[in-house]
Length: 259
Image (cartoon, rainbow, N blue to C red):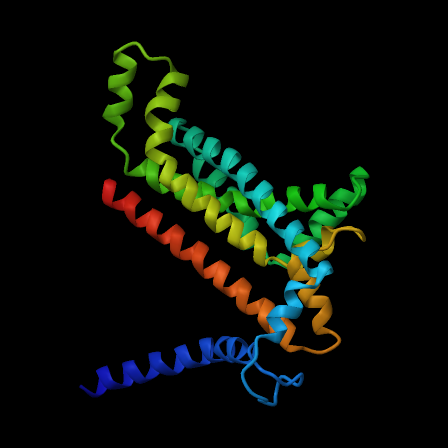
């Protein structure tokens, strides 16, 4: 009983340390006072200021566009890669799969420096194009892992039956394989979108002077002091991210239930 009580206490302390700062940001986003550390009463004026901030709206549009483009590109590459690797038999298959996971294993600051150096060497102008390429690169593993797990639990006899009935490999993929792995692809895309929306380290290295994303906008404004407007924006971003993660989990749960 003492061990159980200690375990619950330990878990409770960890949860408080992890989520108390987030809770404080949400609470102080409704603060009337301009000073974040002083509570001046409940107010929604910072959300109103955020709604009228054109520069912030432009950053949000860039972030949403970047997230959509990168997660769609990652879905195509990751899905084709997972399907292709599931059908080949190579001695180096394990090494190739390990290399494909490197973008999410390498520290972001190192990955950002690598992208910056590479784009500078090939003479590619920094901006939305470089952002999409960089974000697609670290989003691919999320789609790849989801689709790979789905393919591992899929009944191979369905594909064999379709081939025996005269279906071509492309017909088997679009009529059998793709509908079965679609929940995994969507789940991977949602996770990729969430990761792209929250990224700031890699984006700083590969963005241009005329392209500003939402995380970079928040980071630059924090240098002049955290205002309740930033807290309001962080609260909205937190809600959107949680919604995406929950939706991804629901889709993933349905996917496992269908297996």
